[in-house]
Length: 298
Image (tube, rainbow, N blue to C red; front, side, top):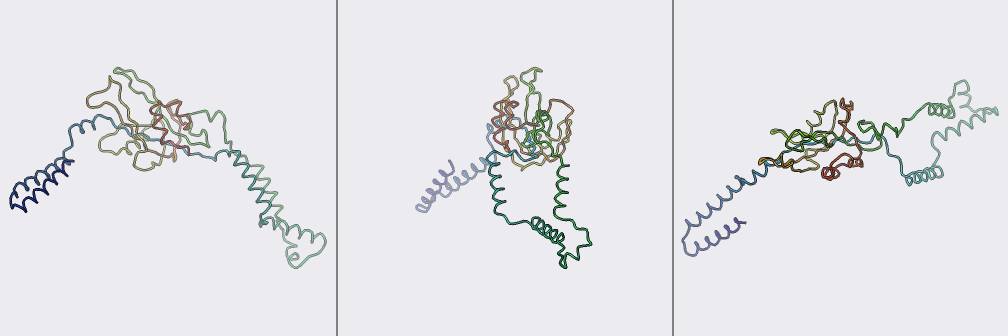
């Protein structure tokens, strides 16, 4: 707010100079003072700002989602609407090429039984003809041999460490890590999204990519969605762990989709693939509040 005031003073001083022909040196001094204040304010940040910027430890985390592999079960309203459309299709549609061929085959067979042949029938008399009905019978036999995979697999869907559970829903990868809760060696096992501390010289996205690549016992491959974080979680360390240079941490989350690599981990219970509705059973309340904002049920 100081710069507009200085400019107002400058205008007044120039006006005073044109009237009296004096004070040119004073005006030049004010101009120099104004420009130097602007430059110093832009180049040199305040010491308090530098101190505040260094009080938080930065982390890069990845929200890895496995998209649904099969379609979801239809709602009863959707089933009724599908039946209605099928009924309208049967009642109002024209005959398909296959249905027309069935009628032609039936008519040709009837003429053959009655001994009435035309020139086209005589040409086909000595050839082996596969009728539309023969094709339908072959299709029926093939359909009977087909065994579709189960959509719901019972106990397998309750195995949270398996990426192949709940095929019709989207899943999120969680990891269990030990977190210090006091000044001693006491540590608490906490569920969270995969994360690593940020290192100088790398971007936060590179930190998130490294957090996924360094997970033990996995070879997960993912496609990251953009370079900007989709969310942030800020928390303070316990009082015994705080220092003048670091009072807490800021975790920046990046979205990614699983594209391959599903080898199971060698550490049982260290990983979990959960639905959005199951996050509350794993995450801390404050952490859950931030994660629910960007975890989508696709």
